[in-house]
Length: 381
Image (cartoon, rainbow, N blue to C red; front, side, top):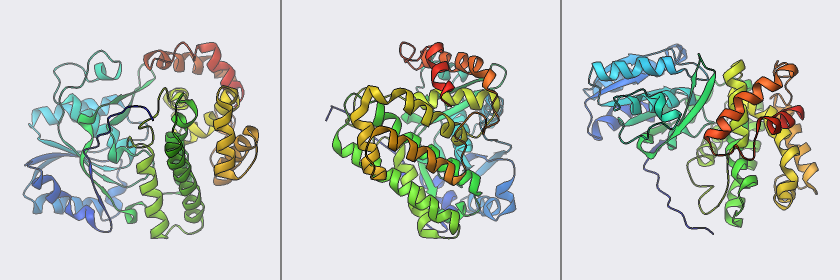
């Protein structure tokens, strides 16, 4: 077990109807105005928008709105939110939606307290030193954005999908009500499952030191995600399965699983960011293409952990068997496992690798993942 500091300041309010208290949570935290950020209108088709507005008004909060956040959220929309927050002297930011909305509010929160271009944080030109407080009401389980300080944003003109990570943009309070997630389509349930699994296995396979305790947590999360996904495909109204799925996805990327590990990185996310930046594929769909290909390329570098994965998750012997089983499970739930299935031309592999290699350098992985190496990995997809 390596030395570490673990700190997560987010308070989770989990359960039925808790979204109706969001105004109270913000007011109790000491804020009087908020920027409400949401997607392209789905929350207005349910009662969630009306419930949120009613809660804000009941708490006596002043609020502005920013709608239109899309999957693979754009920097332009973040700029728009920052301008509103600055012009209206907003005190806090509230995201109601999925991971893309949560990503956007975190970037807005950081940019609203910065005199320069918020993109400076994403290219590591500047560090976040202050931010507006963030609150979220989640309608999709996948990213753990409700309990971490990560944000991924796409700069559309340059096709760069880059990220920030700072505890300063961890939500103050996040609401997780599994009932709000019941209308998620089977496709996006599958993509969410892949994303949650990816968050755990990246460090699980790449860390040079990974304690047994951490491995067991990862394996438990993966098995829970798989079991509840299959249950929800058959029975979308199963509240208990929906709740377990949501809570497991939160644990997958809230800082718990890598604590005490050493040397881990996120190569699958690095490569996938190029896919969704260039082709706007759903993040989880891109990951299910990349992960099996990367595992085939990487397995010999940490064979004992790959063999453990096969045994503990699938009760199989051998690294190859574990990789095949995970790939088959992705196919079973309807997530693509090849470039062709994701409608990405094979002849574009070079351009994808070039895009990903730029992020590899920014993330300090350029010595391992050159453009040529990424080409080799993608050829396995």
